[in-house]
Length: 93
Image 1 (cartoon, rainbow, N blue to C red):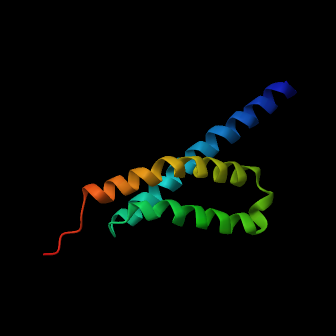
Image 2 (cartoon, rainbow, N blue to C red):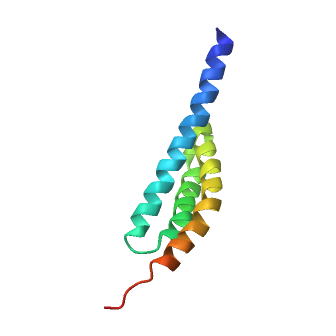
């Protein structure tokens, strides 16, 4: 029974951090898309997570895992943000 508890905690940590990183990345992308710079959502989000990492929350395994997943998501989102910016030029009307 102890082994099942350990496995459930590990799976909860992994899937929970995946969901948290995905939601956080979506939030940063969406907020900065309103100012027409979604490519800046990646460094903005990572900077916020790194600030959290420096505080007392650094002992949280969940936060460290979320930061690692968000960094991996950043690798994908940054080029997509630049492509979105290229496809949606700011109109000067």
